Length: 311
Image 1 (cartoon, rainbow, N blue to C red):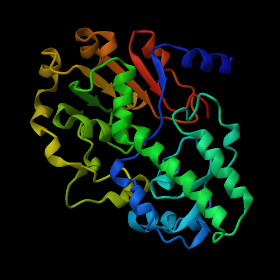
Image 2: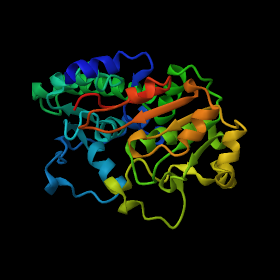
Image 3: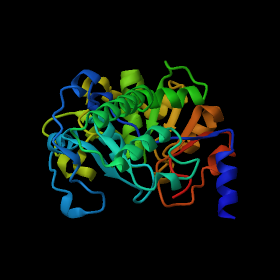
């Protein structure tokens, strides 16, 4: 019954797959890739081995990958993980354990074939000073990095959402949340929309940790705040709009309403659904290890984007 439910959900013409993304500013350039000084074959950071979680700043964490040819990654709570993107973004090939077992409709947007090529090179166990190894490694990481930048940046993900829902890339968006605690999918896609639209995408309530503000305590957030905090210029938010949310909704100021995580709250839904057309509402699910009820929304004519239909 569960598999039948999942297949019905993902075959819903209003339901689309989505994954995490990464700010383009966190991706090393192809030019800088050539300058990396690799000192080890495989990163010392092992997912699930907490004794290896010794990196307290983003710079030190990123440098661990920049110094390594490969880094191990794998399914933990779910298949999709920000770590996959961070590894590639820092010029390192992910060795993805058991990726062959990943369900077909999970991590749909990731370049699984390129990741499998990286796995195959890892298993060859060649010396890191072997010319053939270096040439093959360079070819694979360049392809993975280009794919990441061209398809999986935060901004590209925001464009993907609007294109799939047939909304212009110039839409005015109200991006709603039930709370402001970190949620990778909500935060990363919001970063993308702010980069794409600036003040024409308004987050309510304000998600403070994505903005460049001081003083800050980003390191106290989930994942020590790495990769998804301190990104957006605070001038790209009009705080005065917080005071006029309900009136602006009644005046149809916005073209699209996005709920960054419908599992964590749907503020103003009754008001919005009485004013806006069903296809102007988009609901996102970034959860893992759950039975997603997105058909609750698509059955009403709303769009839904689901990260982990399987876990």
